Length: 126
Image 1 (spheres, one colour):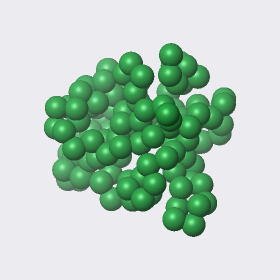
Image 2 (cartoon, helix red, strand yellow; image 1 turned 90 degrees about the vertical axis):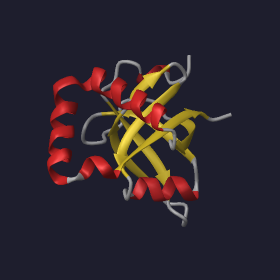
Image 3 (spheres, helix red, strand yellow; image 1 turned 45 degrees about the vertical axis):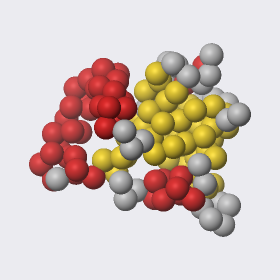
């Protein structure tokens, strides 16, 4: 199965690339759905800009601080534009992260951040 090394993890590093080719490691919450992973972030986040420029990424298990906990795997990232898929990703993230995700959502609601959410689907590299 794809992304086997991430199944029991709470965090992963999402490694994206600047135009210069420099790798940028970002620890993120994620959820696995079959052979895909979903990640939620802000629409204006640097990782979104980097994915638009280069959808080839790497993922690896990590702790919350970004310390690598296992092997990396090449993958492909795509921004989600379908509201139904965004809703599914949000529901799955709520199931995985429970109270912490709901508190994160509540804080975003208070600050207007819910309107600025973006979701990413990650699939294994071909």
